[in-house]
Image 1 (tube, rainbow over the protein chains, first blue to last red):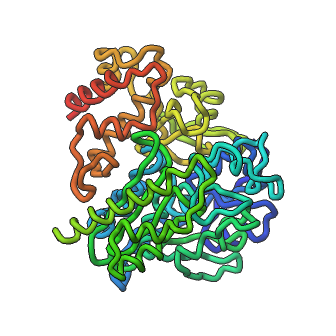
Image 2: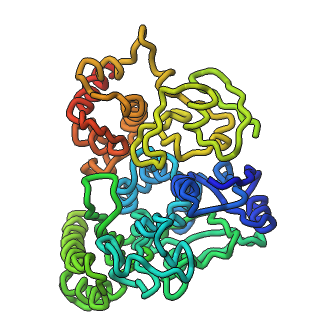
Image 3: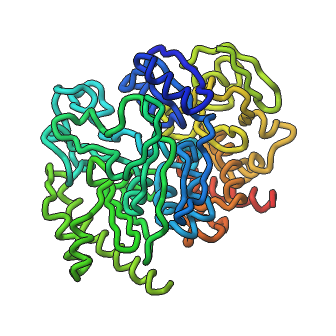
Length: 318
Length: 168
């Protein structure tokens, strides 16, 4: 691990001020992804700002009937929250389908959104990777592509976003609250947080450098059933090959794209009376394969349709 | 950096390079070598300890971030003369072969049983809104962050089930 200096932020304003003023500064919360990448020298921050003791771990009801989840709330705390389990079960299901018990106890809501891809070529520093080293090339395009994206990828990068939690949040129409480097609060839809890779896969979000996520806000729960379904290579503790979050009529796919993928085409088709299978077909019409990952296209169609049917049956039972 | 961590009930003052993981601080500075380094990337669970009662991978955490925290390692769980029920159960059930993963398995199991008692659901919980029962399926799912290369999994599940009954 490269040397770095360390400070513990006293309050959110001090955190963003330090980030703005210190070259090479990064925030650290749970650290489960960042420290892993620092050991491999894929991440090389010169300064770490510890935000874990900021008063941002609360989960509170909003006046609109939703929930505000503090960015420092751990995955375990969110998954176990009684209100989340009763009103947003898809979020609990998504969180507990990811990582391990130990990691969920550490990983935070804000950090989960900003975790980086598990693409094996991103992790292998002996191989070209446009995300790790811009302009060096993409090894996955002609390499082992079984885990790679089928939607939203580019000729520069076909890596996927690994979060399960974010897929549920995308289906739930969550918003993200931040503090800008200038100390101003702002709020925007979660779907506007992540970028598609295009020619610049090293740029993964629309956050300004030094901008701090402070909370995720859920609107009131949607009408209808909610469900998270995930297919992976092991029964537990593995990232998704394909996953889907259903929240009433809203759908999001995981494991298939560089960002949590809101399936707007499928939603529109469903609203127009298409069958679940036809709706997923509409979403996946633009899907592309690099070879080994072609199975994800048919898997997403089948898993998605089955999950929609199951959520509908649940919704009718309510 | 000056950091004070309470380890197994005793306040320990450390002067640390910020790069030091909690795992390395325990093993190399405090010479508590019961906690094991396996993969050093959060994948195997051999380094599992309890921090303020919650299980974490000590390899993926900076020691300086734990100033003021209470850490329990396997040395604080029991001693050869006074074994914890989980330690006894691992012996009774023969829940290991080489033993390298065992301290992590036991610390993880301790944290896991507390999570079930605290009504924290898992992927194996049929209805996440309801409290989970400690079935074998729940034990297996909740222990998936701990790998046993000797594959003593059936015995590990039996040991945890047995100890949980004794601890109840």
